[in-house]
Amino acid sequence: MPTLETLAAFFGVSLVLGLSPGPDNIFVLLQSARHGWRAGLCVVLGLCLGIVGHTAAVALGLAALLAASALAFTVLKLCGAAYLAWLAWGALRAPAVAVAPPAAGAAGAQSGGTLRMVGRGVLMNLSNPKVLIFFLAFLPQFADPARASVAPQIMLLGLVFILATLLVFGSIALFSGTFGVLLLRSARAQRLLNRTAAVVFLGLAAKLATAQR
Image (cartoon, rainbow, N blue to C red; front, top):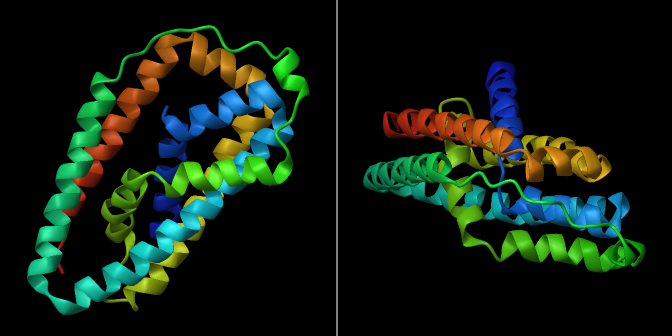
């Protein structure tokens, strides 16, 4: 299993990634602003259920690949590093535009229903292939084949990522008014988070490119 230091580092990086402006946290923010914090928490639960599916797919598929071929490991790590570098470039170039948050008027009074909102979160996550590709590039860097089987380590890391997601996205849902003003009205805050995300992605890309089997 990963060491406590590795899990702590992974948890910290996961928190930064959760705070970085992206489709999932903006989706949680907008749903919370429109339908209330309870609906936002339902969406967060759905997103986390989707993460379970992606984590399982990565754990099973990655374990088979790493056991099968050193060439597959090399190709996988280089593709993952290139993808992370591309994410860093995208974060640096992402526009930071201040916009007015949606009004919580009549729409906020009509909740979409618990199961419907959870389902929205699940579909939002599972229908995005980039999440699976990102997990394929991100999770293996914190798994050590010398310590134990890769698959259980990936599943544990997935659970830690879910915990970070619940903390960050749950906070966004609960305090949607405050976070809405910060993320939607402050271009400066968006630029800061984008640059932080770019540094994290570049660091992960370098770590993955130099990883040994």
